[in-house]
Image 1 (cartoon, rainbow, N blue to C red):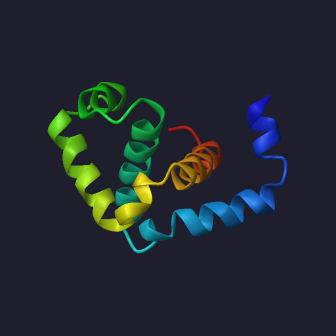
Image 2 (image 1 turned 45 degrees about the horizontal axis):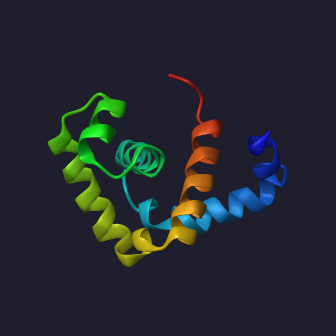
Length: 101
């Protein structure tokens, strides 16, 4: 139900995603995918590298490396709960729009 409410206005969600995911825009598509996946897991499953690594099936050091990259790209924005909420919406929309592999 929450998904339907949040994604009712697809144009608005697209604009939010474009704004919030802008720091990833200059990266290669594969790099964008990895960092977006890591950021979404970090937002959804707590901020511990071990838990995120288990969710993504990667080594915790890989998660730490990606999180450092995300911190460089997003800076203090990751500390703001409102921005984290908007990022999660944008990342979930991105995930929903991506065909399953």
